[in-house]
Amino acid sequence: MRSPAQSGNFPVTRHSIVLAMRSDDPAQRSRATEALAAAYWKPLYKYVRLKWDLSQEDAQDFTQEFLLRLIEKDFLESFDPAKARLRTFMRTCADRLYLNQVRDARRQKRNDGTAIPLDFDEAEQEFAKRKQPASPETYFEKECVRHLLSLAVERLRAKCESSGKTVHFKIFHDYDLDHEADTAPSYSTLAAKYQLPATDVTNYLAWARREFRACVLQQLREMSATDEEFRREAKSILGIDPK
Amino acid sequence: MKWLGDGTVDRLRANMQVPDLSGTRYRAIRFLASGGMAEIWLAEDTVLKRNVALKVLDANDSPDLASRLLREAHILAALEHPGIVPIHDAGTLADGRVFYCMKYVEGLRLDDFLTRVPALADRLRLLLRIAEPLAFAHSRGIIHRDLKPENVMVGPFGEVLIMDWGLGKAFEKSAEASIGAPALAALRDTPERMIELITNHGSVLGTPGYMAPEQWQGEVARMDQRTDVYGLGAILSFMTSDDRQSETRVPRPISAISSKAMHSDPSRRYSSVEAFTADITKYLADSPVSAYRESLLERLARVFNRHRTAVILIAVYLLMRLLFILFSRR
Image 1 (tube, rainbow over the protein chains, first blue to last red):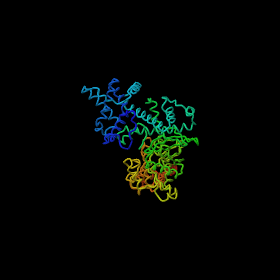
Image 2: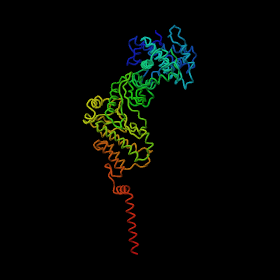
Image 3: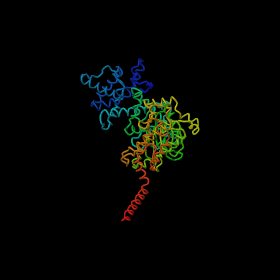
Image 4: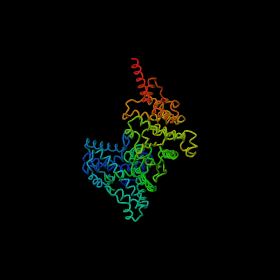
């Protein structure tokens, strides 16, 4: 199985990811599950660390267990898009799984060697940077958005590299990503750095932003259960209406 | 994977909403407002060095919405009037979204502006100015169909502009002569367009409370200038029912004008904007209005109010005369 973190190839169609997971085609089902796991593992890991105060090791085990259940079982059979958003459902399932494990006192590690390659060190470093959230649920929502944008940045990076537009990505990186405060480098600075006319910097940045927008929407579609949820999420998270 | 701090996340989210103006002469400055299908941005025209307003479609893959926005652009282009916001440009952005560029109107929406206009007479004069561009559009065969206080702007020098012509429609043959056949074709309601108007978003497009019955019932053939007369009547009703208005009781002739303009049967409304404004003008001049039949007492009171000085002078003269007669008999 590929790492969910690398799973950016789920064929995005108008069909929902939930339908894809219920598909009769094992390959389609597998790709959809991987995409779903890639989209949610990190926010879930951070969420259980905060909500249930799990140690790093327990949170890692729990996340692995959750994802394996997601992959192996008809996990989404009970999901009703009319009742909840997919990410709320995922969080509720994680809570339920944890409480069941506690109740049954059977929180045993899997010893069958099955494990999904996930970069928990990176997740842990990010978790350490958290500010005091209003609630674990709010934190989860915020992390979902952060992870969505991070995955979209990786998609854009891959796209730029494969199409020979690395400078486009570098300009986007320098201007939009590489600073926290309102201290973006000027276009002329970037033009000098990459030996380009300033007008090219404008055009490269506009291109990268346009592509980034497409990457975000593509990623969001994969993280949404239905087209309707996708549009609703795009409006509430990003303030845009993709129709 | 790149860690994105809170500031970066906020910036990326904000950037997602900014229209891609690469390849155009415009530079986005800030978001101004959002409508049903589009958002409006303040932008700089970098060639002419002036601020303009860009109306940009929300979606880039909806031919229906794109054609509706272009239809609005065609209407604005066809209607050159000081009370209708002028359009400068239209096209498609690099991200596929349709847009048009218009004059940036700095001012207040009518509903906000009314806080500065407490007197009924001043409000009625304002209404007359709202009616002017509408009458002009009707003379060109175009109706607005979405009149409401939010779609009227009052500029810093008191100029009144009617905004948002997205539901505009060509309603009579004279439109062809005035705006030309190609533009007219884009403005007519086709059966497909009416389906869009009626069923898109699960309801009729327009604003409840300001929408004439024939509009919310989807009766295309019955929509004409009287559909806008209904909207004007609704605005009049809004202006007079607003509790910031200085008069505590709405005068009966004004209520009657509003009721006539908003009659459910179009044939019993004012036949035109001019007929509507004529009644308002008569009321302002203390003359009888066509929508209201006065009692004898009301007529006397109105005559007294209108000729107050003359009536008082005559009364004083008669009193003096009477006193003179009485004293001269002694």
